[in-house]
Length: 249
Image (cartoon, rainbow, N blue to C red):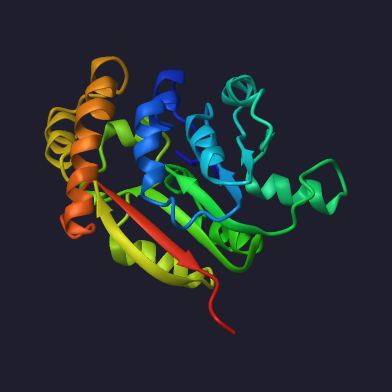
């Protein structure tokens, strides 16, 4: 079956889960808080939990979300936060709006472009990162969280709209092909690796909301974050986190 260039999950529950909750979003943003800078572009903002956390660290956040359903929630969640600007579009569509001189952000370059659980949903990830690079300031960075290990790919990945899971080499090649210099690629979520393998790969569960989501964000993620800090991402996990930047002239 031919898949579209951008894959959306099959249910709203999955959409919300893979765009994180309040507690999980706080943990994920701490992975990058020293790298964000003042002007942040978030691609695939979902329902806005990550967006709100980004706004606590940056002067301005421009958040893009193509799903009309999620965008409605994003608008509602960020309505009263003055340093957040939202657009119902993909990054490619956002570029088109700018070229057509239609209403978009007045910011022309960003200190960081953020993809948290988004890049795996995009068929041509190299082209996407190239687009992100075009928005970066001279010292700007692309910050990424993606699922790791193609051998973990399960039915829940397909239903969640994932084209792939990444190895370190595949992610590095993608960033390099897009013209960026890789700063670092590290594993994250060591605690979640074995449960994911058992529950989703071996037992073929597709349940991602309810108890699974609560246990993940309140128990698994905090323990994984502690191990990440202690090992600096050297312990194998079920996700990869990466920072890539503009090459020096």
